Image 1 (cartoon, rainbow, N blue to C red):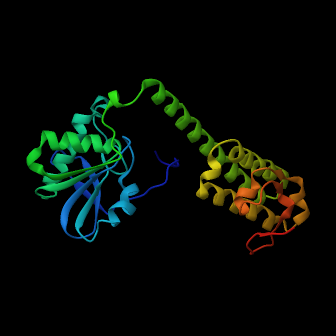
Image 2 (image 1 turned 90 degrees about the vertical axis):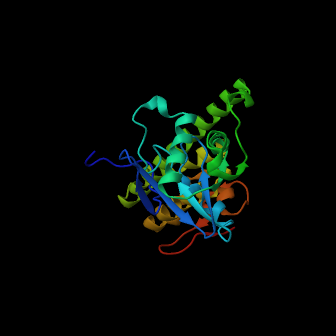
Length: 261
C-alpha cells in the first residue's frame, strides 16, 4: 500500500527465481562444493537466520538458503490452507528442480527438520543425505499444555518487545523535540519492561535502550536531568553494577556514556 510503513525490517536474499506457474522464490548461496538445501524452522522463519550456520559448512557445501512460501520475497500460497507440511515439501522439491541441483544434502532446523524428513520420504532420489538440527517431529512430540504455555510466553515476549521499541522511538523523538519529561518517562518505561521480564538477557535490546538514553542526555547537555530517573535494571546495561540512579551516567554530546561513582 502506498505510503504505508513496514513493521518488520527486510533481510533480502541475493537472488530471485520464478517457478513455472509464476511464483517467486527468494534464495541465495553461501560456500562452494556439494549442493545443500537449508530449511529454516518456524514455520515462517526467514532463511537469512541460517547464514551464520551454513557459513560453518561453506568449505564443503554450496549452501542454498531458500525463503519458504510467504517468507521474505517468496510468494505466499494462493490458499491459506496450503501452509501445510505437504505443500512445503512439494515447494522445496520444485525449487531443487528449478535450480538444477540434482541430489542434495537436506538440512532442516526445528520445524524445518520435519519438512526435511518428509521431503526425504516423499522424494528419496532427490536427497543424498539428511541432517536434522534440533528437530521437531510433529504434534505428538509436544505436550499440549506445555505447548500452550510456550505459546503464551512467546506472545507475551513479543508484545513486550514491540512495546519497548515504541517507547524507545518515543524517547528519541521527544528528546529531539525538547520534550525531556516525555522522553524520561518513555525511557523509564523501557527500563521497567527490561527489569520485569526476560528482556535483560537480550544484548541487542539493551544496547538499543542505552543508545536512546545517550541520545536523550546528549541532547539536553544537562546531567542533572538524569537524577529524575531511578531505574532498577540500569546496572545490566552498564556492566552489571546492580541498581543505581541514572544520574551516575555522565553523558556529553558526541561521547560514549561513562559510569561514575
